[in-house]
Amino acid sequence: MGSTKHTPDTLPPPTPLSQDEQQTKIEHFREGLKASCQESLSRSRQDTSWSRRFFDRDNCLGAILFFLTWLLGATLRLFLTPPAGAPLPLAQRLSDRNFLLFLLLQAFSLAFLQATLNTPWRTARPIPKGKEYLLVSLSLMLEFAAVAWLIHTELFPTDRPWNVITVLPLALFPALLINLLDARAAACTAILQAILLPLQIPTAPTDNTYQLFCFTLIVSVAALPCFRNIRLRIHYLTHGLLQGMVVAAMGLLAFYFAEGPGSADATSAPFPWPMAFQKILLPGLFQGLLTGLACLLFLPLLELLFRIPTPMTLAELTDVNTPLLQRLRNEAPGTYQHSLDVAEMATNAASVIGADAKLVHVMALYHDIGKLFAPQYFAENMTSRNNPLENGLTPEESANLIFEHTTHGIQLAQKYHLSPLILPAIRQHHGNTLLEHFYRKACEQAAAQGAPPPAQERFRYPQSPFTSREVAILSMADSCEAAVRALLSATPDLSKLARDIVEQTRETDQDPAVKCLKLLTENLGQKELSQVVRAIDERIALIFRKRYEDHQLDQVDLTTRELAAMARSFRETILFHFHSRPEYRTR
Image 1: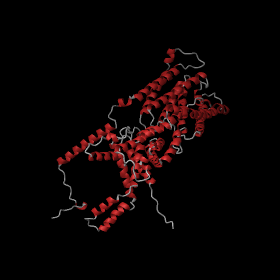
Image 2: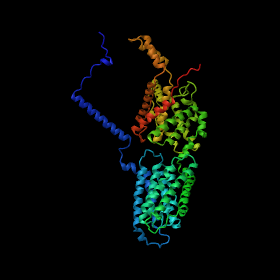
Image 3: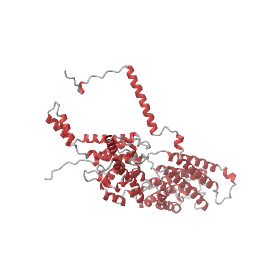
Image 4: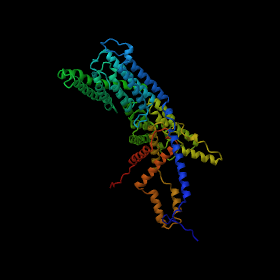
């Protein structure tokens, strides 16, 4: 009596569960969900206390620097006296309402600024917080000192304090910070300047304080769009001239409304255009050009001192004619092309999720320069089917050869004086992932010899997991590009195909010839686009899942929505790379 064989259409209906069984399954589900949430919290380090995460070494350093900034600002403001007036007693200066308000606003503003710099913004550059605190503190200290010097030297009349916007280069520090750090640090510094500047001028009339704040804020914030993402040196002058036009316009408005017919003074004279041109328009345009020239002068020095590349430097590093990339193109052409493909994938994904796309692009171009020490040992540079890593080398020796490309890459980067921001990409773009192929090979050899399997640590990259969003994006793009290229360029295993044909045509209801033709078409024929896309999605999802389960993403601020957006971006870029062309007749 033959056994009954159920097809998908004739499967028996599932047996309904009892109420106790349903309750048991619900309890198991709740326990599993609770354990999963606890593991997720532990892995993302969000179960630690807020104080432990905030009061780290960098934040303590920032608090000390901001306290010194507050102390310098308070000291300079305390000893500022009207140039023509007699010095006031110390007790009277300490009890001055404007001075106390300045101290209070300065303290609250600096505390808010530190909290802002400590917050993980999506578009923040991966720069150490200590450098951010130091640069912002130096900018504010220099601004306080410049205002005090201008007041004592009487370069602008203190009875008309709004003239400071045409004398003091208020846009200089935001322009420097937006190139060295990011928009949040520059914007916070510009706003802090506008808040504190009216109170730094002791003789500022009370009714003009808000007006001075507005004009100063507009002039300072105007530097952000003018000096952002500059890639050519000449743009520092042209954009500085544009910012100077904004300064001149603001000065003209301040001069007209404060001293012209629209002012509160009924005895004011008609609007003097020659005086406005001489004291407002020309100084404003000159200040903009001076700001651009100062950026040209100070940015290279600050880059060298703090080792922070500006967008213009990153743009220069993307030039494929640099000596190091020329070496990679000539000595390891496969690695060079792989780096270009990874750079496009990573840059597109970084743009989608709001990461630093320029930095990711440069990282991708240089992440595999360490393969120059032995290009023939890496798959993309092999010109034949003979793999030198599989012939005559033990799995440990093959793994050590692959590990060496990160160490040699750091040495080459230091030799060619690459930016320090690129070094984490060279060092960490594999994290401490496992070389599964050679580990399994070593386990098979150990099992054949009756020995215990080797430790996984011997086949893991000797580096730490990813520590920034940019490095994580680069690593995922690197792995996905290599995996999908191997998938699309794989040749069918004819021996396995022959065995499948024998097995599947032995007992079948279909005609063996039809079944054989179907198998040959699936394995050797051209696949449909939907099948290719499905295979690419599965391979990318496998890479993402392995990186997550291997705890490589624990220290990176990436949400599941951003990971999904990265996967979609990778798929689109890969499909554009490996597009097909129709074949046209030539005869």
